[in-house]
Structure formats: C-alpha cells, structure tokens
Image 1 (tube, rainbow, N blue to C red):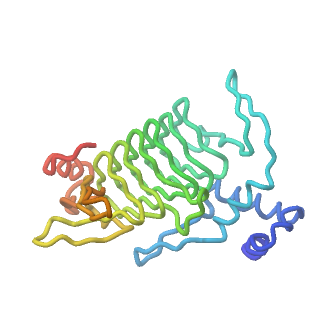
Image 2: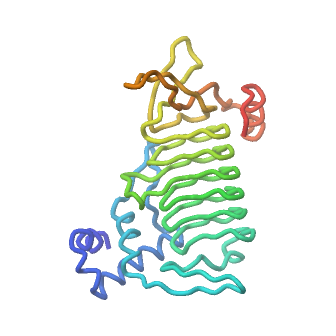
Image 3: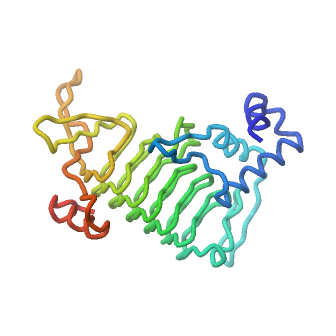
Length: 269
C-alpha cells in the first residue's frame, strides 16, 4: 500500500486508476478502525510519523465526489461520510457532535458537541468537550480532557510535517490552541488560553534561570499563558509565550495530582 500511495503522490494522474483508488480507500478504512495511524509512539518515548498514511488522507479528497447527506431535518453537502455505529464502538456522542469517517474513536471516548476530523486518533477514556475540535491526523492519548473550545490543529490545510500529539492523561484547558505538530507530554496540564505553535517559546520558570524550548511540553508540566518583550522596528511589544510554572506529582493519583496542580499554581482552566 505504501508504494502505491507514494507513487500516486508523485503522479496525480494515477488517482484515476481503480487500483490506486482501492488502495486509498483501504487505508482510510484501516484508519477508521484504528488498525493503522498517522503517528505512533515508540518504546523510547519518541513518536514515528507515518508520512505515507498522511499522504493517503490527502489523496482521499480528490477521489471523492460531493454528495448531499440528509440526517433528519439536517442537510450537509460534502465529500466525506460521517462516522457510524457509535453504540457498537462504545463511544458516547452528544448532539451535535460530529466525527468524520476515517477518524478513530476508541471505546470510552465521550464527544460533547464537538468535531473530530479524518485521520485523527482519539484513545480510550478521552473527553472531547463542547466546541472542541480535533484536527486532521491529530493524535490524542488515553484519558485526555480537551476542555471547551480547545483547538487541536490538523496537518492537511496547510500541509504540516507532523501531526499534533497530546499524550496520555493530559488536561487541556478551555480555549487552548495547539497546532503545527506541537507535542504535549504525558500528564501535562495546559491552563486556559495557552497557545502553542512550533514558534511559541515554552519557558520553564521553576528554576533560578529560565529554560526555553519550542514544540514540546515536557511530561507533567503545568503551563499557563505568558508574554515577553520583543524589539520591533516600531518599538518594543509584548509577544505571547507559554510558561511552565510547576509539575504534577508522579507519585500521586492522576486526578488528585491534577486538582493539586491547579490549586497550588492557581491555574485557570
């Protein structure tokens, strides 16, 4: 399958061929069932991005035709089918939550009125809260809470090198935005309104000197929005950043440590 996808990626004329279309459809079905994924965790704690699967998702769009989908009084006009059989999957879906076919929702996922795009992987026990969005090919771990209005970016428009990854047991506060392939480590807590792009400075201020990183939030970090002064031609202005102000304790129960982290650091969620 990978060879066929890679060849079609280089030569789009092959999308007209039945064999190519069949392969693309097979990849999307495997994504829908969670048998393959765009990115997968490795034993050493890093992640492997399966670039060819992401390409298959992108190639799926041009081989689909627009059609009208009617659900009761509601009408949609799109190329993509919607996910079905939630009872069989063990997934709770509250109206008007929508997940596209080709996304994977594990048993125990709860979707409040929210949206999960094609290629995304949402693992068991995760809550996708009201008006939260999980972008194309994003990877969401087990027992994650995506609070109201959270925006997890996708990789398709524009095409990004790697998907956003939210690892197990994270708490993502209200109106947070995580995009451009940023990875949030296990058990991390993002306070309300934290914005993370690949160019956002993530500054650990828990020690005597600040430590700056980009693109990755370390495990069990407690993060809040911050700003720093940057010089421009027109003068000095404040630029957003993210501040690591503490750690969740590894030795305590996850729910207890989450509550403690929020109280001790006065984090708004």
